[in-house]
Amino acid sequence: MAELDYPQARSGEPLTGLDALSHEIMVFMRGKYRLDEVAGKYYGAPCLRFCQSGKTLVTFCTYPDHFGVQIVLGATEREKFEAFRHEWPEELLSLYDCEPTHSDGKWLMLRVDDHESWAVAQKLILLKKKPNRKPFPAKGAVYTQCGQRCDLCIHYTGTTDEQRAVMKPHLDAMWGESDWAMRCGGCESDACYCKDDPCPAKACAARQVLDKCRECASFPCLKATTADHRSMLHTETCKADDITWSILPYVPWQYEK
Figure 1 (cartoon, one colour):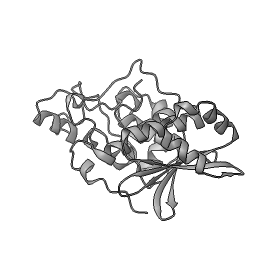
Figure 2 (figure 1 turned 180 degrees about the vertical axis):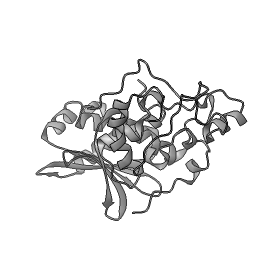
Figure 3 (figure 1 turned 90 degrees about the vertical axis):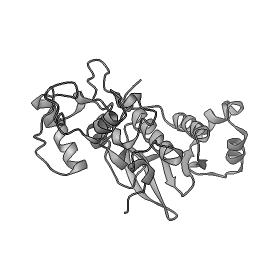
Figure 4 (figure 1 turned 135 degrees about the vertical axis):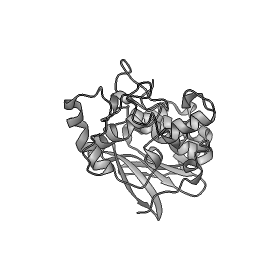
């Protein structure tokens, strides 16, 4: 299946519009939930389902000018929803009331095209399922210049052999098999692997006379993440543990609370 195209994001420009919304969606979903991501199609549109034990929590469909967020509310969720009807916007209430109730619940498809509509969808997702992601502790965190987590990286000199053994199968599954032998002491050390040949993020920051990417008005852009398109809505199937060890440490803000 072809990847979704994010030309603006790949150019290193600020994430705006649906690009920014796509990144925000993935930061929320992965930061709150430990779920498998299953790519597919929904009536011809590319979609990404977030699943646990084969059961779908929410489906995101990608269209040219918006995202479709499909959530099925079972009996328990409908009871919670109806108990606080006054807290939901009229547009959602109208959709909810018009949709028939099937044996497995009400199938709602929300149109999400800005931060306001995404905020409503987030609230509905949280009603459907409490977060199940246990974040890595912030204590002892070591950050790169672009905001990634050195201490969660297989290449970091502070990572033990035991930790590397845990990480390797997940990195192999996501990025392809490798010995992952390169070592790096972090951006602030003399052992930084890109000290003499700056990575794209460091080079960009230097051109703008910035010490850290977080000081930039364009942050986050995809120069600040090695996860590339996988830090946004995508069309690839990924297992929850592979995401934990192979993507999240390299996506700024993913574990910040």
